[in-house]
Every structure is written in structure tokens, then in C-alpha cells.
Length: 341
Image (cartoon, rainbow, N blue to C red):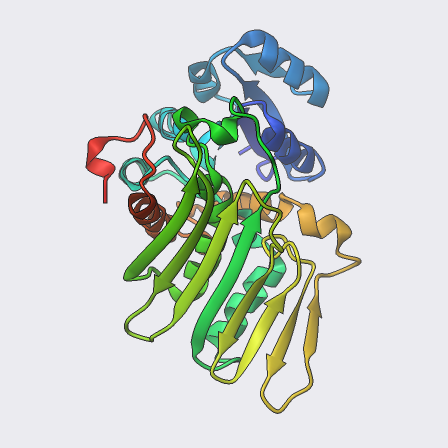
């Protein structure tokens, strides 16, 4: 930990848009300090460091991983580099928060989890949705039987585009397509409530480059008979809503279900109940602070994984994403043959 014994010192690995958003939120937290940033070039790292007042900038990842002042590394590279970046930090003895999708495939995710567990180090997928107070409240309500037995989950996440052929979302080499960037949210939402499915069906529209532009997914759970109808797109501005229907009620999320400021609980025989995030909801809806706070809580408590974003859950989501890609015929150059479902 930091010099105070409570301040957690962060190193940021990558300098893109999500790294900037996360760093901005960290700088607003009293118990967090951003002490270093790394990029593939020193100039890019220095520019990011100057922008945010970060004391040290490195032109290679290994230097950040070796920095003795860094307690935890936040990995914000594109998907295809998560395994290498997070693995480098873990090998150097650092705790790691790694962006989602966790890796390019389940094989790489399993390797990272095995490495972290072998070294006794903290590792967490940056699934900020799981740390949102309202998502946590819904998970608790469902677990407590507030809507009875879950029958269906519906969720979608789509962006209108169009994205140029040279955009990263169209590039198979970096794990492009709708699924890993956007589909990970509906899939993670469904599996938060129902666990790993035993049936996966999918249909997709593919780009000329071979990534998915629009994907529909049907998941099934044979023990309960529950199903999830999910979709993602980088070719259509979908509603971005979610609904969980049970035998005795329903929970509805408005647009932006993955960073909600409210949801409505419908229970048989009761008036609808609106649940709203604390305050006006504007700031809390988009924040990464809940996620960062959970990482720092775990580090102070000596925990090597978060109960809110458990590693086994992240592995299960990656297996489902692999299965979806298998059904729709999407394969990435970085993916190893052993990853094929």
C-alpha cells in the first residue's frame, strides 16, 4: 500500500479512452493515487502523464510492472493484449484489474487465473456493471425470490455506427466485433442471475473482415428451464434495455441497463416499485469508482479475488463468448487452436 498505509497506488497500462475515464475517476478518490502510466511509446505515456499529473511515464509495460511504488496495475489495452499485459504484471508480483472482455478467449483467461492463484495475487475483471449498486440490488432481489423463479432474461447493447473498415471494432487482429466489446454486458448480466448456461445458440451478420456486426444469442438452463435472449450490435442503435421475468414478477431496466440509475420492480399483487440510485444518479451512473473501491477494499483486506466479480464467473462468461463465436464462425488471429469450442 501507499505511504499512508491506506492509499492504494495505481499504475495505468494503456492510454486510450477508457484508461482516461478510469484515471479521471481514480483522481477523484481520496484513497487512490495514480503513480505511473505505461504505453508502447514513451511519448504517448508522457502525454498521458502530463494530462493527468502522473509522476512517472514508461515507454514499455515491463517498466511499469517493475515499479516498486505500484500496488495494482489497471490493464486497459485492447482485448488481444490483455493476456500479455496482465500476465506481465502478475509475473512481477502486482495485483491486476483487467478490462473486459477479460481476454480474447477462455484459454487465455484460464491461464491468467491460474497464474494469479498460483502466486496468491489479486486479479479481477473490470466488469464495472457488477459493482454498480443497483445491479447488486437486483442480484440480491432475485436471489431472495422477489420475482419468484427466473424464467427469462432479455438484454441488448448496440451502437449505430457505421464504423470504418480500419476501425478497431472491425479489426479481427484486436478482437473486434460487437461480441467482446458490447455482447459481454448482456451475457454477463444473464450469468450474474442464472450462472453458466448449458445451451448456447447464436446467429450473426458478419463483416467482410470476419467480425460480428450484429449478433443474437439464446442461452438455456436445463435445470430450471430458464432462457436468455440477448443481442449486441455495432451496426444498429438498439434500445440497450434489460428485463428479468420471474414466476411472480418482473424487473425492468430503462436504456443504459449496464450503468443504471433506476429500475422498476413489478411483483404480482403489488404496485410497481421504482428503485433509484442515491442522489440524482447522474454522477454515479457513469462512474468507475465503485469498481475501483472494490479493488482497493479487497487489497486492504488481503483478498485475492472479489466476491462481486469472482474469477470463476469471469471464466464462465468467457466460455459462453467462445461458444457464441463458435456458432457464428468468428475466429481471431490471436486465438489459439485449443480455444475452439
